[in-house]
Image 1 (cartoon, rainbow, N blue to C red):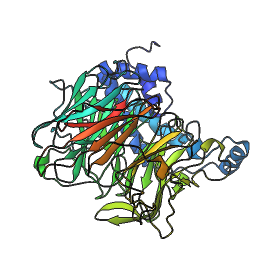
Image 2 (image 1 turned 45 degrees about the vertical axis):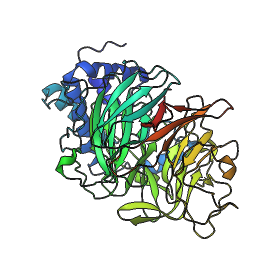
Image 3 (image 1 turned 90 degrees about the horizontal axis):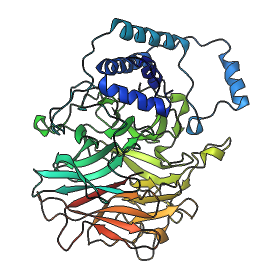
Image 4 (image 1 turned 30 degrees about the vertical axis):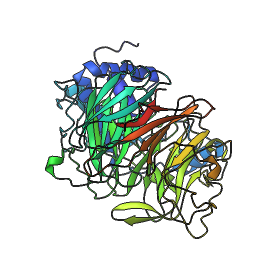
Length: 531
């Protein structure tokens, strides 16, 4: 580790510019754990970035046009979806202002207050609401990058819910291989989505909030069991995506404001809009904040490059997607992908699955009304001058002749960037199979880029009770199996929920139900695999 003296101002500056190496990121995070002054400095620089993002544009150099054309001709400038390096640097005027901010913070040693306060208990109270500031500090501690991961490589971890009533349901995260568990808080409804950070230190998850039709977003720090509430949201379509940046610095998610009253225990929502907006949780400083304020913005996934840009989708009759800087909220409006909604980039960054079609706003929620089909992009690395967003429908045997569409649905990549799965697709057209069962919202479809994508023949063979429904699907780290969360019909209003977690082998091996038995199980799932 490089010796840098008492404080690490140069690492903080480099982190905001996206220029840290992996070793420097580890060094910075380890230093932040024990240095309050540097945490304050980082918080001040983050605020400075936001200030810079609102500055008027400086007059461009007279030779800018010629330089850009020369860059294009030389191949040094590439579109955002396949750019391997950082975006074009901020201009000299903004850099000068940033230097002034650094000088004020470092040399005047401003006292900006604590960035994250240590809780007196090992787990923060799930009902404790953070400050109303959009960058409120809500985490009880700063992330220690050197802490051991809870799940070993390839191990299955899953959320498990137990309790006799919706008023007191206990959620735990369990390592299936060892039986070890971590308390994930008291909730009022089942978990419906989960995502493990790439460094294995954090688990993000979404739970239903009782029978209100709302959801709660949480993050669990696996090293010390700290649970952080990140907001309540209407359970609208396309709001269950949890997107981690490749370096685990940022979690992106979507909230649709919902007023549940002061006793609901939801963190304050100071969003300026009444619709969907993207939010960011920054693990190093334990802060959550509004990233957008447009009322139609959805956090999609992080760009497959070291720029750490977040692809944000904007719902409209004709939707679009544009990269957004997670540190400043600044949009790259000149790099809009028209007709693209909620792209999910493959692990190797070569392709994306995305939605295309005509959208409609109904009851405060956006969904597809005509031609809504999940698409596979071209290979970004070899798309050439044509747009990679001229997609191929994931389903090879569905023909939306009359404008039929999937209103919504979910998809996921396998770890090899070849396998993929689709489920919970609400089809608006007539069935397109002789027996009238295809496509079905209660079925899951597995396929691959190399093997012909999806069709009625790729239906996943599930063993499930009547009226069961699919909640989530996760691929094993080696692609040999999928873990499927299957929700069971409720016995009645107010009764605790129940779900099976089935691990299905894709290579001809045996399949099993996690924690299953003759009696109705508790709610098991969604699952996450250690990578």
